[in-house]
Image (tube, rainbow, N blue to C red; front, top):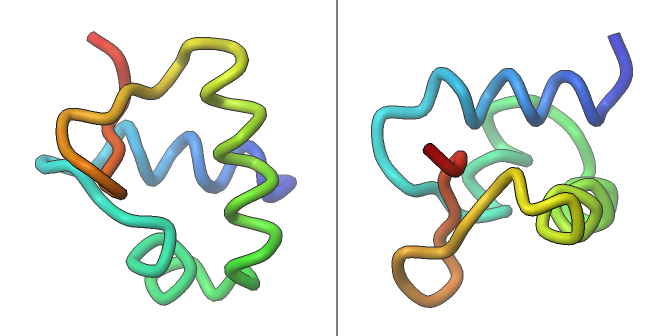
Length: 59
C-alpha cells in the first residue's frame, strides 16, 4: 500500500477533521510526504477543509 492509499484510508476512518501533523504522527509517514499527498487529494477534490489547517474526506 502506498502513502496515497494509507492517507486516504486514514481520512475515511477519521471521525473528525484532522491536520497534516496528526496524519503524520498516526501513520508514521513524513509530514512533507503527507503534505504532498494532501495537495493531490485537494486537487482531486477528495478532501475539504471545514476549518483552517484541518481536513476531512468529502461526503
